Length: 323
Image (cartoon, rainbow, N blue to C red; front, side, top):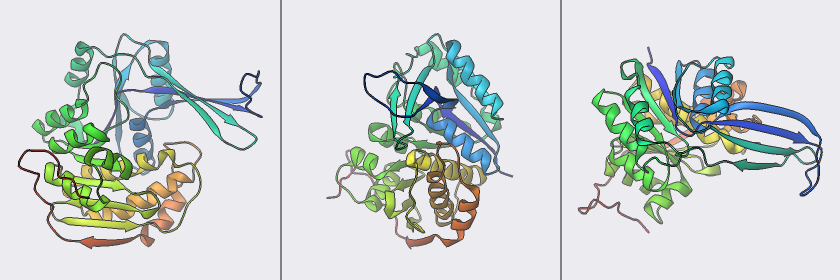
């Protein structure tokens, strides 16, 4: 039986979407429809994992009236949440959808600052004994250190809980060194490691200490690496739609696999992750997934493997860079 998937969203948001007939800068607009929904990458992960039949627990920081609205929406969506109160007001994101062509103009607030005491309270409330895996993703609010997710990964290991961390840049390498399963995309990988192929970059992350690395590579598919080898999954077909939730769907599948086994078959995980990511593109809102498409595509994904051990990190501890 798979363990509970705890999804961490440290910069929760209330996503507000306005639909207008035509967006005109400087003009006055009549709103045709409005939607409000709890948002943040970790919430998207929880929604997809729940849709795929897994038990989830949303973990995050909330404050003010907006935070109360986020908590209410999570409850209405059937998602169990353990939210730590903070003094600041939870942020909002506003998307204005132009009915003429479907394009969206998005405004993202930075989020409220989080104090050291609030961050400590969040960590102290973690229900480690209930968790099968901890999945961390999304931006960090002001006040938290860049290695906040890595800090959670270290604490999780003390409780025999593995962590899946979706990050880029310095946060990605910190998560790898903390022993997490790391999840990123090709651009974020190169931001962290320099000019490298996706396969070599994934190997380098494992060499730094990551339990495994899963890297999305756009229309070229997806790569996974562990100390047992490297795998690339090829997409079944080109899919058009809304790509904003594709990475979160991948993270949900990876987290579910790690909750079932600390050493899953990564070739099998990739088949599900590629299918889920593509099925998420078909839906208009991040956090949703087209289940029929997911089930149709999953057995069609092709995976190529290279069973070679990843390289060790450089003696200085800095990640090696492959040109």
